Length: 436
Image (cartoon, rainbow, N blue to C red):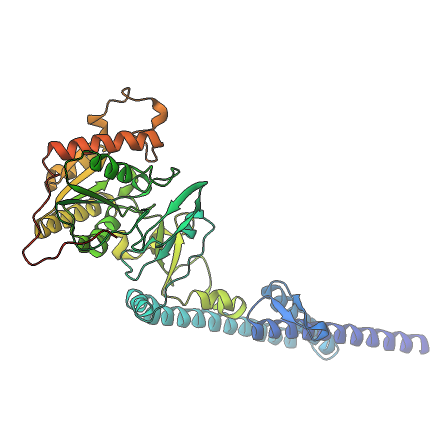
């Protein structure tokens, strides 16, 4: 009997030790999970040296801890339980699992409902409130263009060039004036006597991507016209911004160019103007199914808090087209370009200036110009492909400096042939501007 009694005691002690070990491991798992919930991330903080310790995936700790507690409890209850007892235990475990699952689902639904009704539904209004409060979305991107642009005060314009730049950009000199134009000097808003003022609206092509300051075709056009020596002061204001589409160019005309009272507005065309701008305001989509917002709140809290912003300012490589603000998405494709052309045409009639779309124009944009009655100059039609060396890249979205010179020459000839280079008479009582 003694050996059997000793074996029984040994078995009981081993079972007790194993049970206590499993319960202790479950407690450790629960502690780590609790610290992760408290900290809101997968890093828990320990007292030693105040350093962070990576804890790992929370699901692993939850399921391992649950298994440890169940294993330890089962070992403790092993001598007392019979067949029916184990069945009741299995039923309780199943009921617990169902309860936890339903609780998590309801919590996920509740948090999504809150986010949609309180944040997504009024994202544009909240963005406008941010702007009125002097706040703007941060630009999170590694693209080099981020150093020369800034979010604007108007969400529909999205972004523009920073003013007063004087820097090396792409190994080329870049200067902007106080109004954010690529120019070496400022232009007064008031008109000068006996002058013709031209405004350029475009994207990186008109801006002069990868060319030196003063080599972009609007700057060359200003020099060419003033070399005529006809006593007229010609000013070519370059409002082009890389990554713009026609909708943003129409907004630029309305918000920034009209105060300069242009005589001629030239819209630099590029085929990617049918698409979205390069930088976008992306509305957060709280209905998406690829992530759990409850999990982010519990274990990625900083990411969750970042997404409480009404919109994110992102570049093309990062934004999700389905989340782009409807006000911006409406300016794309044929319908959006048509609307932008109609807006600019209406402004030209209201403010008495000439409007010309200029550039390598394909069939779709030509048809839109004809339908809207907007004058155009297609370099594909007017400049033969073999007239200039291919390296000039006259018809490319980013011409070389020689290509910009060719474009300026042809643009000057076209404007002169149309009779658009005649100075307007200043209204009586309007004082002429002096040189800046």
